[in-house]
Every structure is written in structure tokens, then in C-alpha cells.
Amino acid sequence: MLQVHGVVEHGDERGRTLGFPTANVAVPEHGLRDGVWAGTVRLGPDGPERVAAVSVGHRPTYYGKDGARLLEAHLLDFSGDLYGRQVVVSLHVRLRPQRRFSGSADLVEQLRRDVADTRAWAAQDLLPG
Image (cartoon, rainbow, N blue to C red; front, side):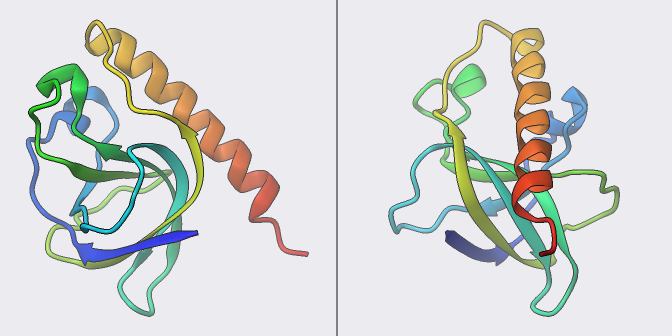
């Protein structure tokens, strides 16, 4: 499991407009692989932990290879303002590589599958016992 500690930053709010709001955190220099991950986000050092679908990469659908590299975490079943909050993002399972989609509709369809895959991972791997 890989962990990223950081502060939630303002982004371009594209995830929000697509129906998948994200907590944006700067990507550290150490070896995170680009892709979509099933993971968790801890809100603050001692706060609650939430299941999240996490994207690491350059957002190729909108920015090609020239976009800033970013970690974007979509916290499942969460609504609230996280801007400026310290979080710990844990990347547990890499679901797929980053890829460019032909447009927003295709990306949203894939994001739905990513969320479903993240829920399936959480149901299997996060059950007590």
C-alpha cells in the first residue's frame, strides 16, 4: 500500500461538473504509478477514513500529456468541503492505467465502472474479520 500525505487544493472543478467531485492533492516525487486506484482517504491525522476511487496522472482526456500531474480522490458517499484539510490517501489496488477518452460522456461511463470496482474492492477487503 502506498500513502500520500497532503492538503486538499482547489482544482478546475471538472470532477464536480461530471458528477464525481474530487479532493485534489499534489503528487509527491516518489514512485506513484499513474492510473486509477481503489483506496481510502483519512480526513486529518486522527479523523475518519473513507473509501475512495483515486486517479493519479495528467488527466489525458482534457490535457493530453501536458497537464499537471495530480492525485484526485473521489470519496464514495461523501459530501462536504475538504479544501485546506490535511488528508492521508492510501492507494491499495491499481484498477487500471490512465487513458484518454473521446469525451466527457465516455469518461463518465468509465468513472461509474471505477466507482463500482472500488465498492467491490471495499466490500471484499475492508470487511471486519
